[in-house]
Every structure is written in C-alpha cells, then in structure tokens.
Amino acid sequence: MEELDPRFALYLHYRAVLIDYASHLLGSRDGAEDLVQEAFIKFVPAGGGRMPEARPRSYLFRIVHNLAVDVLRRKRLENLRNAHNAPVWTSSQTTPTPEETVLYRESERRAMDIIAGLPEKQRVALEMHRFGEYSVEEVAAHLGVSVPTVYRLIQAAVATVTIRLERDSNGETNS
Image (cartoon, rainbow, N blue to C red; front, side, top):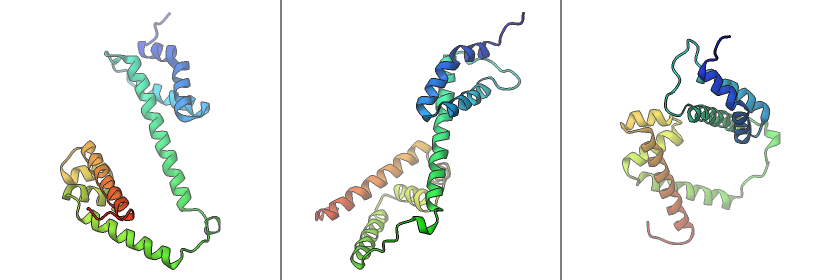
C-alpha cells in the first residue's frame, strides 16, 4: 500500500478543524469548505515540493486565514461597488439644505487646508491612495518606502485631519 504524502496526511488530519476555523472567519460553512480546498491546493502544490519544516500545521492555518481575509476583502469591495451602482430610485431623495451645503463645503475646504499642511510624505501618501486611487504598493514605490510605512503615513494623516477638524468643530483654534 502506498504511503500518503505527509502534507496530504496533515491536511486530512486537520481538515475538520480548518473548516470550523474558516467557518468562524467567513460566517459560512459552504464557503469555508471551498476555502479549505483552495488552501490544500496552495499547501500541496502541483509537482510536489517540500513540506514546510518549521510548524507545517501553523503554515496550513495561515494559508486558510489569508484566503479568508482575501474573500472577505473581495466581498466588502463588491458590496461597496454594488452600493455605488444602486439604481437612483433606491437611494434617499433628500436634498441638503443650503446651510448644510455651506457647512459641508467649509468643512471640505478646512480638510483640504489641513492636508496641504501635512508633512510631504503623509500628504502624498494620503492624496495618492485616497484621492488618486493608487494601490498602497504603488504609493510605496513612488515614495521609496515600505508598504507598512505607507499604511502608517496614511493613518497618521487621517488621524491628524480628523483631530484638527474635530477641534475646529468644537471651537478650539489651536492647529
């Protein structure tokens, strides 16, 4: 009798636990089963390859986790696209008052002033990613920094703008 590939044996041993784990992440047992099958394909690539020597069980769970994150990210993007492409008749038909329009425009102007005053790398990262729709990787390449640094730059920029707008709305004048 032929001996099982060690990766396949490991997969079979943890399959039920992996499905439970993926179900918890995705909220769907059917989606979890599909995801675990995809994880197996990534874990045991065509043409063999070696078993990861350091903690293969953890490696298998990491594959499932990463695939689940990808699925959830895709669903979120689809939901956003669908929300933006919803028929006009499904959206609220309320028109802002002139006062609301003035307040919005003033807040927008203030936000743009704050963004213009950010440190250059923060400003460029924020503008490219949020307004220019560049990927984080593209921003990182443009700025010559790592992807985690781009995330930190964007996060710091958003925090600064949010805090300063909050201060403005509370009547504080320190910028």
